[in-house]
Length: 138
Image 1 (cartoon, rainbow, N blue to C red):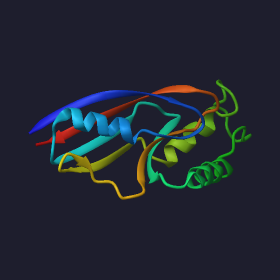
Image 2 (cartoon, one colour):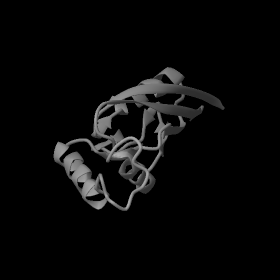
Image 3 (tube, helix red, strand yellow):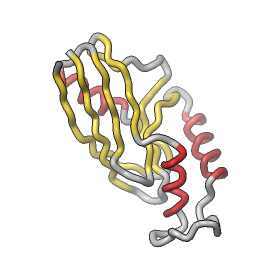
Image 4 (cartoon, rainbow, N blue to C red):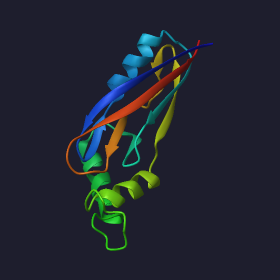
């Protein structure tokens, strides 16, 4: 059993940023042919998502829906130290995921034809996010 772990630094802005290529790069560098790839984001105001990568409208619609569900500046929130998008970004991250697992077969991620791995940034402005990719197998 082999393991390899690497941290990707991802520049984001609000919405989805595809990181499939970076994750594949870590996998290829590991030399692992069969196993499991775990992807983990080290933040509480952004999340991870496996989603369609063919039509950008899907990404826009997901962002629009979640923003309607959890609006910035909701008067319910008291944690607003970093602005109107502070607490709403934490709620969005809590409703989504901070990690994903993808099987590895024949040295490749076993994703569907139209699937990609994304960082979902829930804050306004540009941010730099750290994503840990851990590959384990043979």
